Amino acid sequence: MICLKRNSADTNYLGAVLLKSTVSSRLYYPHIASDAMWWTGIAAYNPSDSFSGLTITGFRSDGLEVSSETVLLGSREKYIGTARSLDFTSDTAWLRIESEQGITGLELFGTADGKQLAGYTCTGISSRDGIFAKTETPNRTGIAFVNTEGSPATVTLTAYDDDGRRIASETIGLLPHERIADMAESIFTQDIRDATYIAYSSDKEVAGFHLNNSSDNMMLDGLPGM
Image: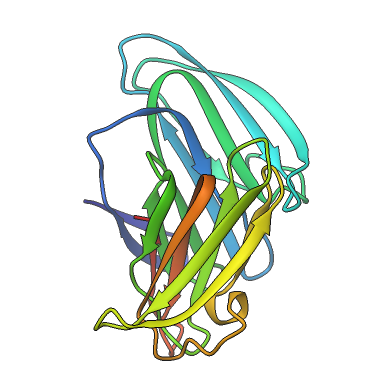
């Protein structure tokens, strides 16, 4: 696990991200937030002994590609910045980074008031099934996930309690490269206040994560779909 801290004149952030020993030629950053309340941090790292070309592609929430650029990343060099400093277009909802060699990366979310910071690894988070392992209710868990493929996807989400009892189930459709981002309760049409985790299955590869916010807005944790 890596600990993260960001200091400025009047703010302190502290968070942690679980490290992985694996690399991937394709990383997904399923949600980009850059407004008066939230900032998003992006990082990619080339652990190899040679240069690697990165292709960074931005998509709107409806799946339309809005930007693409190529960056040359040196041996053991980082690509790092916030959504604002990296000058993503205002309608960028999520990112994909493709590399000529295996890389690793992470994504951070923080609040402008300096009270909350959370992050998660972006390596190996796409799959056809997984679990959002922790939910907080009411209205304390936000979920974002994208259809990473170029054809429509059907995704079924099922909410369970700690004893494994099914609380509710919801099936949604995603256009190619479409992203959904909402509070967990808003994704389901049934009441999921008794749920403690959410499983998902899809007929296409999807990538996602969830953020859990404390009731006093002092703590935040981020976890990818597992």
